[in-house]
Length: 169
Image: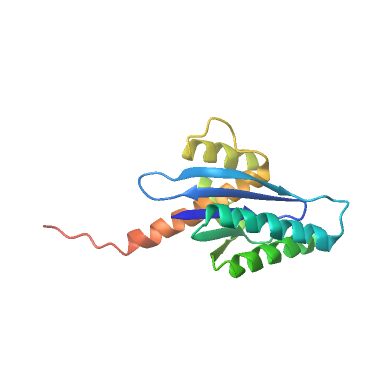
């Protein structure tokens, strides 16, 4: 199974594709979608849609794991801008008939590190260890996207394991 994790953003969207199954998840590819801050909102959203469409066609994920939007009361504009990007991501996934799972940032961090308030550095180091990466996943947008995919994989594995029945023979 392939899981594509996405960290939505208007200027930078992180993505990370994991191949799951077997004993260990494997990172297929990770990167960012960047938009030009000098362009109008609609052109930036269109760029995200076009680039995400190419990523979906290339990896053909079974599931897309997307970080939910969190808004600090002091920065509502940031959440609104991210909401535009997240809406385009959800629409593009729906248009490509890809299942979507949404996770809060604290749930993702807890799933990956065991601490819902882990720092960006802790998340990066844990991902590096889990996936046996030579380098830290950077930038943070990439690490957050990979973390969303790992969280989704973990949830899927927990659901599958909870359905198993162990009997004494």
